[in-house]
Length: 203
Ligand code: GRF
Image (cartoon, rainbow, N blue to C red; front, side, top):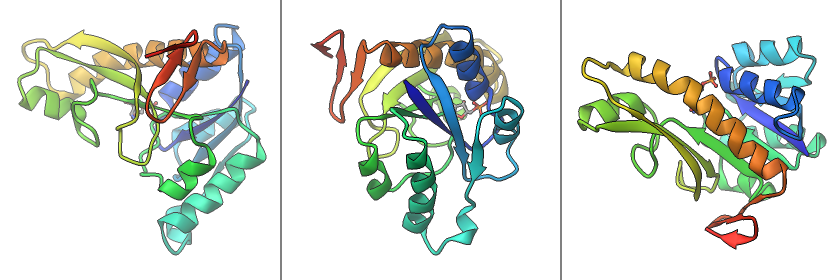
């Protein structure tokens, strides 16, 4: 299976995924890494790892659709079976999503449907939640709203601040993303815009 990864930042989820494809835990290859941020660490890692990597900066385009169109035209060139959004911090318009319907996953640092969008760790703390976590979900036009494939949970501890919570969650995110992509690459999980199929069973 050929995977394209979308990134905007540090790239720790990308690193975890590439490692898992290279040591055989995920039967797939990351064939391209794409970004809206030309200088991000994730792109630099991809290049060091020998993976084709390119960015298209939104400021060079007239509007969201024009930027999406440019980026997703590049993504289409690598003919991915699956697109993984691993810390891609831009909303993707419906027209671009339609091109890859049911072939896109996102990892989001909250127990969806709680806390779509940004600042999820602070939101969980402000709400006094006893648990926090991360979700992998299928991407649909509504933000962070597609069917949830899998979640990882951690307890919130007294004295946690958003940074501490984020740091404790991160290794669980990596494991969750790798396990989820493995299910898809093994053909056990299929994405749909309103549900998921696991081993042929509708979830
Ligand atoms: C992760 O917390 C991910 O869930 C969120 O953005 C962060 C990206 O981290 N969407 P990294 O770039 O993978 O290190």
